[in-house]
Amino acid sequence: MIAHVVNTDVGDRGVLRVYLDYRRENPNFLHNSARMFLDNYGRVLIITGFPIPPTMRAETDGPPGTIAIAKAVEALGGRAEILTYPEVREALEPFRLSFTNRPEIEDYSLLIALETPGRARDGKCYSMSGLEITREAFDWAVLKAKELGIPTIGIGDGGNEAGMGNIHGLVVRHIPHGEKIASVVETDELILSAVSNWGAYGLVAQASIELGRKLLPDWDERTIVRIISKLGLIDGVSKAQTPTVDGISLDVHEGIVELLNALVDEALR
Image (cartoon, rainbow, N blue to C red; front, side):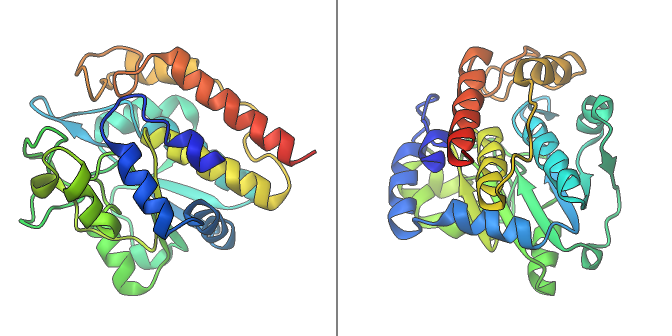
């Protein structure tokens, strides 16, 4: 049920068709991701930040989910560190998180790539509209972790993120500009969602159910999105500095969070 909720295709970007095909082949993707998370939370590297052309400023999708995962890691007794762009770091500073600029990948027990560009077949990264992203991408860290055998989880919604290489063919088939933008960067587990923040929340919700206790008892979606927007992050669809995510109003995002909370509460009764 959680996987269905986080794949509600409000933005109508084609993710529902991708999800239905992906779930048919990988019905336990969320459970498997949650188990990997719970088995490897000791020291987690979270990579986030997606630059939006033409300004290349990072968007509001990804950072809230990063907060959720980092706080869940802390609740488990682990340590989370974040690799991201300067403006994302600045926007996340109020939330008392740990950051790194030069991570030694071999020092981590788990790497999570959350809404961050993954290179396409031609080695370049692209926006959903097919525009090239000219800022540095952090997908090299995913490739390094894979090389070292460190567990990796990808979370994405558009097909152009690190981790979406797992379903490259589905992205090409169902997503506009898929042939051009589809990422080839794979992760051990992939969480597909309609909004990447929702995928992160779904991971925490599923992990809470698996664990038997709520890892994120208090979550204020509206306040968090407003803060990061005020501090400079933009909506990835409208490209405006507004307290919205992927062109979707805060009312919808709050509704998704409320439903996930209700599902966790029901499962833990």
